[in-house]
Image: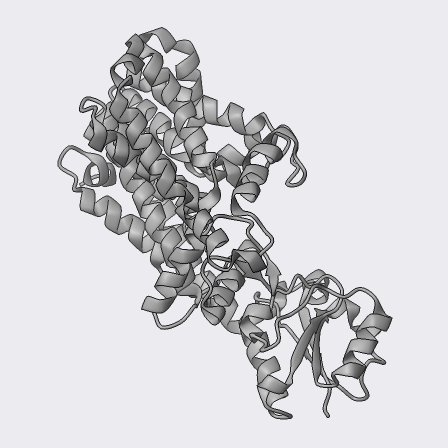
Length: 492
């Protein structure tokens, strides 16, 4: 049986799609160490769990209401369920969110086009390399995407049943999505629904009092965490969650203060994030331009969704490649629609797509199930942190130690070393570092290997431990070795 027929024919089972996506997303989920952005989330959640304060986020002891509380709460909940905060517990919310996105993409395709196209779109999304990558990352981005696509799917599933329950469900999904990464989800949802609402004046049937009442109720529910953070212990917490939501979403959009990116950012990001299926994207775009008038209203709306999201994200100077994630489900639907249309005259193309899905799945399985766990078994922060703690505890009990960061270490190993005294901001002044070490002799100094020479006089005959890069020896470069972390530990 051809693979395409097995995966997305009329007789294919939805279970195949969800099970396949679950394996790609969850296989060896704890095999890789926390990296980059994940460090911010897990350290913040770890401090919530340590302190028991789930209303006031801190990052290494500093107020950090950078994102709403929803994503932190989900990670903390799974940490409790799994008996501690680890890679699996922190990343599981993103995995489940990615499965929701795949399911909603399938449902949208089934309702707007047909079931086979919906299944194909789901497989396109589930085997797009960067979608799987971000579905395995402990941040709020996939949670935000799940809320966005779920709200749009809810609209199309129930648009012919207007009423309080329909509107309340829609607004509650948006409220929960807004707890994850701010108001970007509601903005994108409203944006992509505009063409649908304007078509044949569909907006008229939604002019109801129940729409307003449901929206107000969901708005009150959305505000509950922010109100609680002010009323419960808020007098000792200077940051305002609502102000930071406004700053992160509106101020940054119209007056970017960080995350700058060139105007062509998403011209590069969209093909990269949809790889390997982006090979078909130019043909889908060409079809949209060439046959626009002959396309069905549903096909045109999908194209409008991709275009509007793309233009909206490009319209601000604050750009990051992963901001393009909300466009991926609609780009998958757009490519799937083209493939199904062309397959009527070119059936071999659809069979080739089946092999592409199988090949992409195999590569993802080998990478996340083999290469990543292997790399993290031979090096990286986790074994480095374990070696540092073992060496320090051979000298004195761990609670007696303090950890400081010299130069730009970004506190990467901090979560794994788990100091009793929270790591303060990086120190760049050697005299200040020397004074702090003199004040508390049992101080571990974290830095990069390239900065070790500057610390040669800090301690007499210290223990120096270096991180081993996570690639086999034959592939290690001098740059990798210099950028690796190092720890300087006094012997007494």
